[in-house]
Image (cartoon, rainbow, N blue to C red; front, side):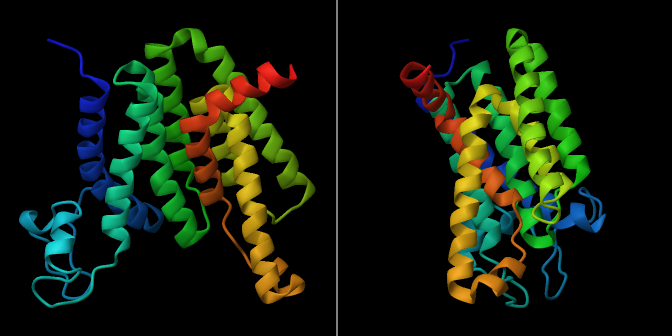
Length: 256
């Protein structure tokens, strides 16, 4: 059996991402509501008719049905095909960057964790403990099986990232939640040293968005506007996953 080329691996990962993205939509909707992820089958939000298998093909079915239920015509939110497509693209990018081998496993797992975390935090302003716990266990298991030599570095990175955000949380109560602190720890387990540029990117983007809100609403109103930090952490994590290692190498060669 011949190993996959990087291009073939990226195509396979992208296709799998479309399918898994459909499941991540279910996770993002049901998990914070305490509902089963397996039952019942996905239903139309209007008439509650179970979605037929041929109407549940990722992205394609939504396009063919023009974003509406086949039975009652209720609109189906564009977010569902967007999450499916985004998951597929991100998984393909991970393989293109890290190769079609075990080096990509951590990145693939991180994407599948990060996508529902961003969606849930946007909707509910929480990062469920179950997802953080699952992420920590998954990262440690993948490291132990595929890259045991990297385990100490990633544990240190997790402790440093979680500790860094814990200081922010402690110094400025209400600026972020403990779920963000825990997710920063999990990001360190997945990213290792690349978590440093990931956190800097998250803080930079978060500051820019916060500044834009204050410019639009005024300083006082802007400061009172609640913006979940989880999506910024996810964006930073993806930045660290895809380009963080070269950034760290460049910084070390230039300044150390």
